Image 1 (cartoon, rainbow, N blue to C red):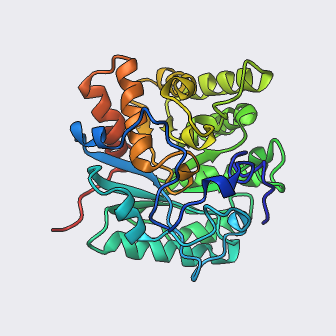
Image 2 (cartoon, one colour):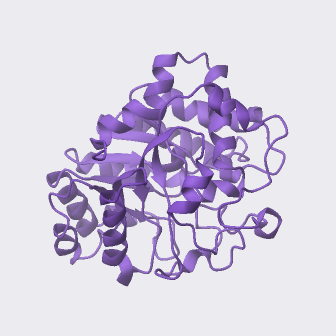
Length: 335
């Protein structure tokens, strides 16, 4: 499926990609704020679980959505991630599907399962791609029943072929209910003003756990518009559902070059306060985050914003580590 520039989280291809292009797969985008040096991250070495680790090898997989983006249209593999996270105390990661061509979904899952089993990298879980609207979904996801590493499924819901209300079709709902029966979660990655549809889906699937990706995908530059109000209402509704949590991510990739913490704090703080200390999780969203900052700069910004909120050390550790371990049931790799 081909996605329009505006629909791929609205910012992937609408950003001036050429201005943000990195020199090599492991290098960092140069859109950081001068007020955010990278070194302070190490001053507070909280163990970090990255719940949204992307990897893609373009020699193995086809990602139609990134073909026109100079920053992202290259391979990003484990060695590049290890370089990007050096010194950040990332102790575990959960892989997030990268919207490969649907015929490659099983191949992608097998690729990350192998990484989960392999020492020398922090990956201990994965959310794989799937198409819940298909009658073939049950057979597909059944291949991974009982896997200690497959934690859930995601389908990006803001593509050209995914109209408003798409996730409320009878087959889609049935498939997401099945995920709950299998002990898997479903990630909600959709337009910010359609979170009301997400709430309706969650209401029909009380035994399935849900994750709101990227704080609900609202651009940090969005003013006091109907779109922002719909986003706020949607997040509030989802936060009332006890089986729903929120990933704190995505914010930085929509920020304009020269951004400051004050400019990105609004979306961050609303999502944080809405879901509370026990139902929010850090997510790196690398390498997509490099459209706005390096992963170190993103983590540093988060720590500055948590400080602005007066967050305790206990709640910081919940955000960066504890909540993710509990939600996904993550275990250490054998020594």
